[in-house]
Length: 256
Length: 101
Image 1 (cartoon, rainbow over the protein chains, first blue to last red):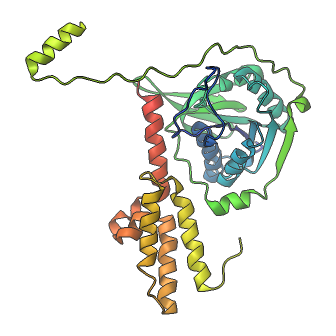
Image 2: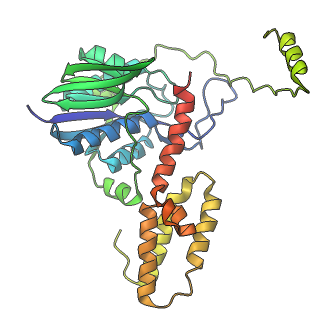
C-alpha cells in the first residue's frame, strides 16, 4: 500500500475575533483593512494531516496545502507550511472578480486532486465567512469518493479509514477504503501554534502559483447575493421588583 | 535568523520574540507588554554573566511554558501555556457560535 498523499485546502477569512461590518451598499461584508487569518476549521485539517504523519500507522508521502484567493492568501499557505504542510499551491483569484462559490471550489479541487494524485482530502467542514458548508460534500460527489463529514476522530490502517463523528446524542463511526474525503469538526484536535521561526522556515518551502485559466474551469457565479444585513441589535432587558412583577411582565409578553 | 552572539542581543532577541507571541493576548497587548516589560526591567541590575544566562534560559522557558510563570514566578501556573491560552479562546468562541444550538 503506497503512502498517503493528503490535500488540505485552506481559506483566508476575516479573523474569528473581528466583528464583521456590512458595507454601505449592503452587498457584502467590509473586508478592506480588516484582520484576516486562516479559517479555524482548515487549521484543524492541517493539524490532522500532520498528526497522521506523526502517528506513523500509515506512511504519509506528502501534505499539500491549497488555496484560491487574492495574493494575501499566500500567507495562509505559509501558515499551513509552518504547521507542517510540505508544499503549497496558490490559485490567484482577483479581489475584484466575483468570489468563488463552493461548487467552483469543488471543481477546482477535483482538478488539483487529479493532477497531484492525492488519495485523501481533509477539508474544514465550513468556512466562518459564508458558512456554506458544501465544498467537501460537493468534492466527494464530483470525485465519486466516499466521504465522512464532521469528523471528531480519524484512524487510518492499511488503507481503510475509520472516522468517528459527533451526532445528536452520541457518536457515529463510519469506515471506508481510500481514497476519501473528510471534513473536520471542532473537537478533532488542538491545532499547534505557528511560531515565528517556523513561519520563517516555511518561507523556503515550495509554493506554486497558478491562475484559474491553468485549470480551464467555468467558475461563473450561479448565485446572486441580494442583500446583506447586520443582525438586529439586542434589545435591552427590564428589571422587575419582585416575583409578582415578573409574572405580570411574562403574562404581558404572552410567555405564560 | 542567525543566533545572536552577544548577551545583550540575546536578551533583546528573546524579548522581541515574547512580544510577538503576546500580540493576541486575551487581556490585550498593552496588559501583556507592560507586564513583560516589568519582568525584564526587574532584572536589569544583573551584571554577572551567568546570572544573565540563567535569566535568558528562564525567558526561553516562558516562551514555551507560561507567560504568567514569568510574571509571578510560580511553578504551579506553568502548565497553562500561552499557546494553549490562544487555542482555548478560539475554541470557546467557535463552540459558542457553532456548537450550541
